[in-house]
Image 1 (cartoon, rainbow, N blue to C red):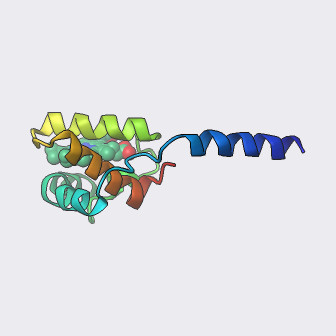
Image 2 (image 1 turned 135 degrees about the vertical axis):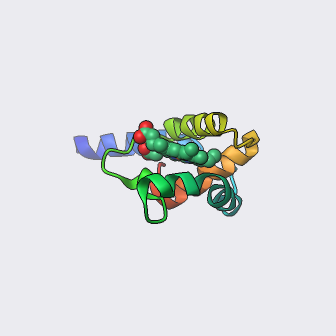
Length: 101
Ligand code: HEC
């Protein structure tokens, strides 16, 4: 019973919050990542570069950290993404790799 109560409390908390990056367009995000982000990740992490997101000790653990990391990489690499581009990238990376709710 206690577990059931806890579970329903959690569900309410989750559904009250909008899904992260739900305004982003994952298709546009993928195009941006393929063009502006992937080559560096590929040279460092091999394969298709997605190991940077899926390695056992990867750094991003929450949707907020993902948003911050995208902004940081954008600024550090001079990728020149607008805020809505960052949201698209977030939508793509979250949908494909991180799956934060
Ligand atoms: C010049 C190389 C380079 C470019 C360009 C680059 N990154 Fe990265 N990125 C890295 C490195 C290196 C790491 C790993 C850093 C670490 O372990 O803390 C990383 C890590 C990340 C992570 C965190 C992965 C995790 O969970 O640990 C994300 C998200 C990310 N990059 C997104 C992007 C996006 C989006 C772009 C394009 C706008 C981009 N990166 C462009 C080098 C790059």
